[in-house]
Length: 460
Image (tube, rainbow, N blue to C red; front, side, top):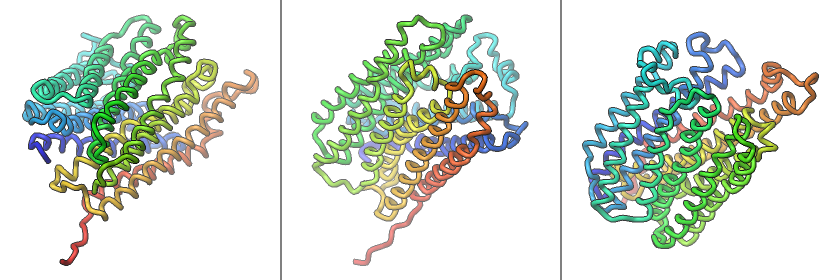
C-alpha cells in the first residue's frame, strides 16, 4: 500500500459486503413469498421486503463506490487523501443513517414512518426506489457532498489523470441527478418524467462513468498496459455511454402520457446503449491480451473481465430484448424487466465492487501481491457460483416473463388470464429462480470464506 490514507477504504468494503448479504437474504425471502404467500406475513409483507431489497442494493453500491474511490484516488493523485478523518466520519454517519432507515422500514408502518420523519414538510416519500424518508435523503446529500469534497480536493492538489477526471464527472453527475428526488410534482406524468432523472440517469449514465474509471484502474494495475492506451479506450467508452445513456432516458417515457416522439427517441437511443458495454468487453480482453506484467492477483483480473462480459449481457443484451417501443408495449412491467434488472445490476455494478475489493483488500491486509493461490482458488469458485447462479436466476425470470406476456397480454381479452392466475401457472419457474438465488448466496458465503483461507507454508 503506497498511501496510509487508503486504509479508510477498508470499512466501506466490509460494510458493502455485509449489506450485499442482507440484500440477497431479503431477495430470497421475496422468492419464497412468490411460492408461499403467507411466508413472514404479516410481520414483513412483500412490499416491505421489496423496499428493503432494492434500498440495500442502492446503499451497498454507494458504499462500494466510496471505498473504491478512497482507495483509487490517492494512487491516481500521487498524494494522501485530503481528509482521512472526514472519510471516517462520513462512513459512520452514512452507516448509521442507512441502518436506521432499514430498521424503520421493517419496524414501523410506512405511513407512520412518514409522520415521524416530518415528510409533510417536504414530501418526497412513496416513490419506488426513492422510498427513503426526506430526512434520510438530506443525509445522503450531505454524505455525498462531503465525499465529493474530499475526493475533489485530493485531485486538485495532486496529479490529474483521465481515470480520476472521469470518476469525478460520474460522482458530480450522481450528486446532481439525485436532487430530483426532492422534486415531486402533483401531476403524475410529470412526477414519473422527473423520477427517471434519478433512477435512469444514475444507473444508465453517471454510474457507468464510475464503472469505466474503476475498471480502467484495475486493468492498469493487473496488466501493466500503458496508461495512454487505456485512456483512448476509456474516452471512446465514456462518449458512447453519455450519448446513448442521456437520450436513452426516453425509453422510460413510452407509455406514461408523454408525446409520441419519445417512442422514436427512446427506441433509437436505446438501440445504441449496448455498444459501450460491448466496448468494455473489447477493452478488458484487449488489455489482458497486451499485458506487460503477470500480476500475482489473477482473480482480480478475472473479476474485471467478468464485469465486462456479464455487464454486457445484463445491461446490453437483456436490456435490448425489451427496450424498443413496439416490444416494450407488451413486456413492460413483467418478469422480463426483473430479469434485465437483476443481471444488469449484478454484472455492471456489484461485480465492479468485487473487482476493486479483490484487488485492494489483500493489499490493505498487508498482502501486496494479492492473496495466495489457495485463497484465489476458493475465490474463483465463489466467482463461478455467483455468476452461474445469477445467470440461471435471470434465465428463469426471462422464462417467467415470456410466459406472463403470453398468458396476460398476447391473448384475446376473453382468453387472457388475470395476474394472480398467471403467477400461479408459472410458480414452478419461480421455484427454479429461488434455487439459483440460493446458489448466489452460497457463492457469496464462499467469497467471505476466501478471506480466511490459510496458505500452506513451503519449507525452504
